[in-house]
Image (cartoon, rainbow, N blue to C red; front, side):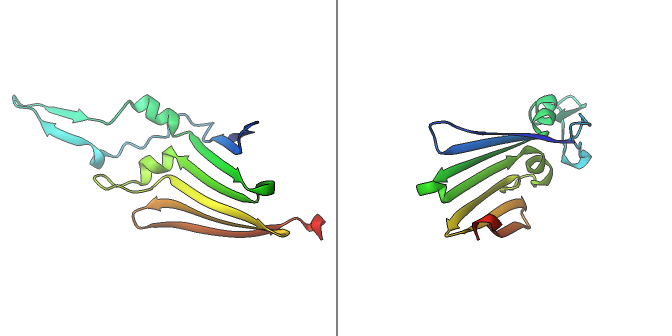
Length: 140
């Protein structure tokens, strides 16, 4: 189950949205035993170091944040950005920088048609490029 909220700002050409997902399951963190950093202390014993607070990390894995800039006359040009924390944490590779979890795109309205292009990074191996062409049939 998921629910979303979108709001257009009154005096700015900007719209933001937040989507909450996996609402029926609270714990969606995957604890990979291979990703844990085990180091040996000077006097023996092991310590496990984790990055950040696991409760806060799990909380933000339930949300996707998006923003859209509406530019030009009649908002005919749009720039979109998004962030998915669940994708970022689960698909990024340790010790490598990547754009996993980030997405972006542009849209332009030409005459009666809308052309949209978006890119979502999933992994170092690649991402997904979306191309869309749309129109309102009532305009014809």
